[in-house]
Image 1: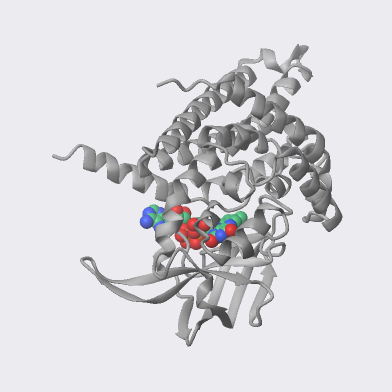
Image 2: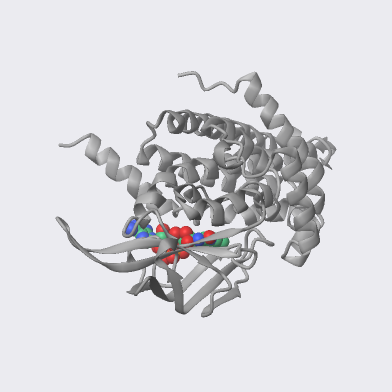
Length: 385
Ligand SMILES: Cc1cc2nc3c(=O)[nH]c(=O)nc-3n(C[C@H](O)[C@H](O)[C@H](O)COP(=O)(O)OP(=O)(O)OC[C@H]3O[C@@H](n4cnc5c(N)ncnc54)[C@H](O)[C@@H]3O)c2cc1C
């Protein structure tokens, strides 16, 4: 299989990289300090991204998106990995699950979101249900033409900025060959609907993105706001889960390359015991490992992206890519920080932020343990006794 990046892909990536370096990176320190993107800055970046064609690139062309292929998305995602996620996410969005919009939902939610007029957040996780997503207890009970939602969601990224929420709730029980199973349905819920409360959390990684708790207290939603059909919440989520995992690893490549560049420049400058520290094997071998692991992740990402495009990627492959990329960026940012010594942990340089931001990658799109579980079960299936 040819995993090379064509000239066209390189051209696209170069355009995104210039945008990231010129329009996004200069604001990183401010966002970090405020733990927020000021509204004015947010709108300015959004307008520039729309004008440059770097907004909602993953969305279908017929609804106003750029309709990028998976390999195109992967090379763009690598570039967006070179900036703090709070800034990258202003352009690099929305949630692909919105492609499940039908009928009026297209005009009311999908198209305005692609035009940058509306903003969604994705609410599945709850205080009692993270990895075990089927354990959610948020309920939506049918009442005439509406559903009434009650429950609590946790860690919902960008919920402060969002004006509508993609909420997963239990709408009943189904008998299945494996016994009774919760019927889980996704709803599009306007955030100004009475009964919704949003409280921001203070988290280690990705300052400015704001993960939140959202409470639903008798929130009334019309049945026409069901996304993907009643009981099909996980069905539509699954369609895009693999892409989320591959794109996470792509983002990790961008962040890791930025950390490696800083570490290499430092190793070529900083002198100790009369030598540039890059001449000590303890430093130079770390750089070698970084370069090798970043390259391996890139190949895995492109392999996954071409397979996604062909519709042949498997759950195991998506988990392998996610797991390798997220652990790679942890090692790279940690070693880069070590190469900078004391300067690595100061707030004067962005490296301590890279290190903090890298940490959540092993948790939020499936934990490392869950990915190992998926991969190992498949290996055991592949080689029965
Ligand atoms: C910053 C941040 C942003 C997020 N944004 C969103 C969002 O926008 N929307 C959303 O819906 N969710 C979001 N999440 C939630 C995220 O998807 C969950 O954190 C993740 O799925 C893990 O769930 P948990 O945190 O409840 O951990 P748990 O599931 O409670 O896991 C705790 C520990 O137990 C281990 N564990 C659990 N089950 C197993 C098993 N079977 N085998 C081995 N080990 C196991 C885990 O690996 C982990 O180490 C976000 C999370 C974070 C931290």
